[in-house]
Image (cartoon, rainbow, N blue to C red):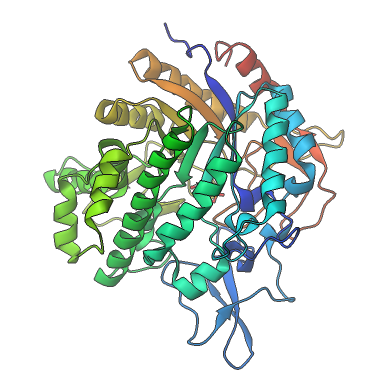
Length: 491
Ligand code: BG6
C-alpha cells in the first residue's frame, strides 16, 4: 500500500534549447528560439529581426506578434540570446549525466534539436555531426542504465521552416517532420525505446487568450490546423516507431493544467468542462482513442473551423494510438464567468486567483492535490500507463559563503507532489515514472531567465550569460538520491 511500483522511472527532464547551447556548432542551423532575447516576469522575451530596409528591431514574442512586412528574424550583435550557450550541455553532457547517475536516475528526458539534424529542415541528408552528438549522449546514458525518454519536437523549429513554410500551420510540415522522426527512429534504434513525438501541442489552444492576445476566429483556425497537422505526424510516428522496433513505446506529452470552477454557478461548471475539453481532451483523445472527441464538433462549429485534412489522417489516428500518457504539471487554473479583479497568469494558466492556494513570484499556484486530481481524472478516462514528464519549482536560489545551496522550498514542493502521486497510485492510477522538470538548472522557456532555477544541480550562469558554468549540488540533490534509493518510501 502507498508505494511506488517496482522499476518506477525516477528521473529528470530537459529540452534541447534550454540546455544544449552550441547553437552554431558542428553544422547546426538556426532555430526559432535562437532569435529570442531574455526577459523576466514583467518583461516579455522579444524576437529580433532585420526589416526590408536593413534596420534592426524586435517585437514581443507571443502568438499574435507579427514581424513588419518584409522583415526576417535574425540574430543581432546588440542583443543577448540565452539559448545560444544555455548551460552548454553540448560540451558538459558527460559530467551532467554522471551527476544524474549519482542521484540514481532511471530515466532522463531530453529533446532533439531539429536544426542540429536537419539545419534548415529541407535537406535530403541529415547532418552526421548532429546524429553523432545524440548517439554519444545515449551511449553515455546506457553506461549508467539510464533510459532516455526522447521528445522529438520541443518547440524549436528550424528557422527556415518558420520563415519559408509558415511553420506548423502548413501541412507540408508533416512530411518534413516525418523525415526527422524516421532518422531518429532508425539512427537511435537500440539506444532509445521511449519516445514523445511532441511537447505540449495543446499549448496552441491554451495560448490563444494569453500574453495580451485577444483570440479571433482566424487565430483559432490557425491553432486548430497546427494541432491537426501535429496529431497526424504524431500518429504516423507511433506507427513508424512500432514498425522500426516493436520494443519502441510512444507517448503523448500534454500540458496538464486542471481547471477548477470558480463557483458552483452552473454556468461556471459548464465553462470549466468546456476548458477541459478544449485545452486537455481535444489532443489527448485523438492520441489515446484514435479519433476526435464528440465535443470537437462543437468547437469547430463555434469557430467555423474546416480542417484541411485527408481521409488517410483519420485512418492514421486509429492506427497510431499511443502506448502511454505523459503530461507536465505545475499548477491549476480557476475558471469563472463572473467578473474578477485578480487574474493570475503563469505558464499556460490564465484565471482567477485561488484563495486557497499560494503562488510563486512568477504567478504559478502551489497545488499538489491538483496533481492527484489530474492523475485520477485522466487515468479514469484513458486507463493507460502514465508518466509525469514535467513537474518542479522555479525559484531563485542563493549560494552560501561555503558554496552550499539550501533549497528546502524545492524539497518541500517535490515532497508534497510526490506524496499525492503515492495517493493516486493507491487509488489505482498506473503511474510508471516521474521526471522532474529542469533536473539541472536551465534557461526558462517563458522568461529566458537562468535565475528561475528548477535543478537539483546549480549551474553558475546568470541572466546575462555571465558565470563559470560550474555545476554545484544543491541540498535537493542528496534528498532526491535518497528518494530514488528507497523507491519513494523516504520522501
Ligand atoms: C513547460 C515547457 O510548459 O514548462 C518547458 O514544456 C518549460 O519547456 C516548463 O521550461 C517550465 O516553464 P518555464 O517558463 O518556467 O521555463
